Every structure is written in C-alpha cells, then in structure tokens.
Length: 213
Image (cartoon, rainbow, N blue to C red; front, top):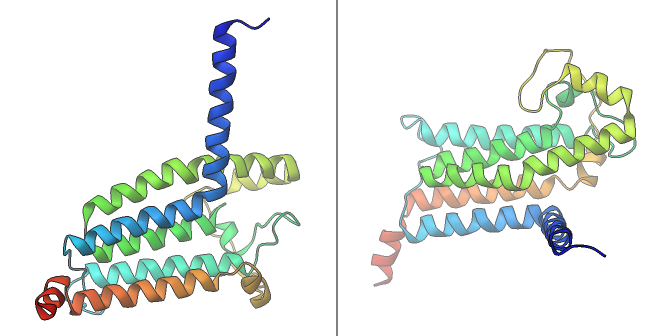
C-alpha cells in the first residue's frame, strides 16, 4: 500500500505530465495568443510602431530585416527537412540544429523591435523558456533515439543557436517540401503584420479615435 507521500508524488507527477502534454500540443496556438494579446495591448495603449521604411530611424528597418530573415531561415529549412525520414544536416541545419525555431525567434524579436515596447521582449523570452526550451530537449532526445550515433556526431559539430563552423551551405531546396510544411502561413502572417504595423505608424490609434469623434 502506497504512503500518502508517494500518492501525492504520483498525483503531482501525473498533473505535471498533463500540463506538459497540453503545452506541447498547443504551444503554437498559445504563443500566437499571447503575442496577439500583447500587440492588442500596445494598440490600446497607443504605442506607435517605428516606420519600417524610414532608414533615419534604424529600429523600424532593423526589425523588418529580422522578421524577413526569420521567414527566410524557416523557409530555407522547410524546403530541406524530411521529418522522421532522415536526419537533416545540410543547408541551415549545418549552422544550427533548430533553424525553424531560430527563425521563429528572429521573427518575434523583429516584430518587438518594430513595435518598440521593451515589455514585449520580456514576453518573448518567457514564451521561449516555457514552451520551446522543453520542446527542444524532447526533440533532441527523440532524434538521439531515432538516429543514434549519426545524431551524436552531428550534435558535436553544431549548436542550438549559433554556428560552430561555416561549412558549404549548398543543399537541394524543394518547393513542394516548403508547401508540404505550410510555411506560406508564416510568410503571409508576417507580411500582414508588417503591413498592419506600417499602417499603425502612419495612422496612430489616437488620430483614428479623434477622427471617429
């Protein structure tokens, strides 16, 4: 018969596992929801984004370039990877073990840079730690279980966030693979949000409210 302490430990572990499963299944939805809430808060607080095309103000163009770089990195990786079929080690995967996640991070940082609210950077950091650090750990464990020594050798030559070496980056990129992974959603979403931020710069909420009144 289990003691009350053992029962409590098992119940706590089960609850933790359930929470982990929920976060794992819904990490993208939850990330987008949190980001949308904070962008909406910026709009309500009448935070005026930087102009993405005004090169006299470096924050706007820099943010736009980060967003486009993130989209580009994700698209590059999506056109190469064959999930669960083979270990991707070429192209962007020769620079970082997780180019899709790094691309998403660049996109998020880029949007925060354009918006110009420091609190948004803290939110992005929290989302990365809560949702994506555990996901990366689980994914690397799965890859080791699947590819064994091949994964170990690859891991020793690469990093999660930055390149350890600069090998030849040529790799066959497949448009059909890009479509299969639905990266056009990320591309279209980024273009829409950039257009919205440009619009909010040109027509701040305060001016729109005054016109309505």
